Length: 250
Image 1: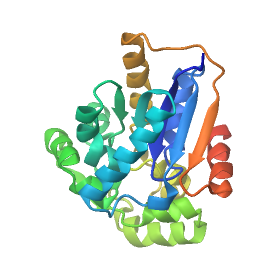
Image 2 (image 1 turned 180 degrees about the horizontal axis):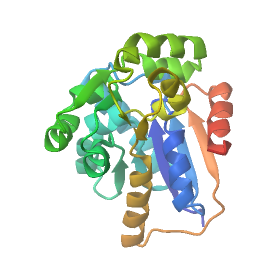
Image 3 (image 1 turned 45 degrees about the horizontal axis):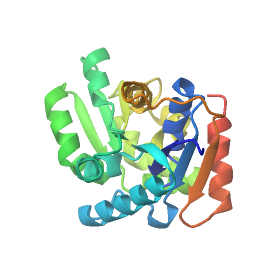
Image 4 (image 1 turned 120 degrees about the vertical axis):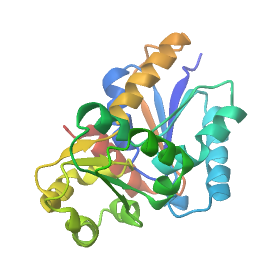
């Protein structure tokens, strides 16, 4: 009998940073990762378009024998999680969200920069979170186009973008909330611009929550830890970079 898998999807390879954290707590599960490069980026798309895209991916992953699905894209999470949970009540859906509450819990008095897509920052879901935990020392920076540059792995453009968009916060902030799963891939480059800062991201908490949910529903399995990668354009270069990220020792 074929084992049931955990499905994970993102607009590209950024969600690999989430899967790395999941594997740390669930190393014996089998996974399918869906990289939707044909529709990347999600951040500047209309809500209705994002809903349609995410719904189609959900159906593909369910058809691939997935027992739980992780939305590893902050924009997709903010725009589609509620709709998808209402439509697919039979399957647990775990959704990433910006780790702004972690600042409230651990570093409330320090000036904070939230880096996220325009779609995430403008979403109702994020704004509810933001209003609830606002430390009144927070800057919101909609990083339009940054995830796409990271997806292309264009280091010169990344450095230029960061200098132009977040260089103004140099010396002003201590906490950085990485509100897009692509952004942990450029922590070093962000530090080069902003200096010694503390990073907050939602992947670790998501991984723990996923394990708890699977445990509660008696869905944990002891498999081989296989990872299947699917890219919506069938790009081999995406698969290579994805597994480079997964296997990187950090």
